[in-house]
Image (cartoon, rainbow, N blue to C red):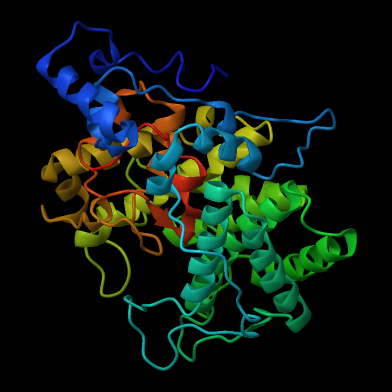
Length: 424
């Protein structure tokens, strides 16, 4: 594979070529001198010279046995990278002080007796934000009290067997929403556990206790695709399937259990196979349904699908799997991303499949949401800064950093974002 940002399949966009000083460059230099590159919009940072990426924290670090003790993000290297940009790091990793959290509940619930596709807020939002806060705090300051907070919560939750009782909803949707909610909590939790391991902040017994607890929870979520009472969605490769797959993939990466890595890759391939020839997902980019995807939700769901595919590919890179070059049914990640960008640029592209020229694009404007942000773009744009899709999509994003979504593991601006780039 070509080095990050130098893919042979990614021709250099004119915006990245060297050029003499222009008025735009002079303005850029003034901003950089006073506030740093991180104050620039993402599109401007891409278009102007001088904001280069230190790629070390997202490079692969594979051991001789084929497995690395780093699950996904190399947190120690990332912290050094952030330290090099001084106070600007707080734009990516905000600091609000260390803290503690009591054990999480045992019961995992969904929507209950009243179904709503806007089942907000997530019942585990407290856990999600706590973990994000602790990881960001440590990455910004290196203060071990943030690690203490994470360790304390995980150990008390492990002892209480938190998240161990999944209660199905009383209608035909059964486990869909309880598991959707749980997976949003698990992915940031895996990131926190990975941080504790990388920093040697757990004793052997503590590590074993947390690992055993999380392994049992993940195992309980694996229902073979049969999460609804009226069908098994093993082949229904939509955003829900990929939410499940990225949970398995991330846990496999962090725990070293290749069973879960393989399940994650299997879901990834299912997601690609569900792509039409134009890159759209055949299960989500459809005419409006009473409940779920389609219609004005089509591009929102396509964004989630692309995000999950990118997340899986990035985890795969850490462990020696080149999923960016994987094709299924003739489609790859770039095809799915291309459709998303084309749909944002031209409404008729989406109307071909949905019957309506209207589409929702709130994911372009939200900095934090369970699954409707462009946080995943931090990963793609860092690996492929010169790819034409990077420049095109960056012009569409209207959210301010940090971009965070538990669906993709948490605050990806903090974990992996180019410290010298910036979204609007």
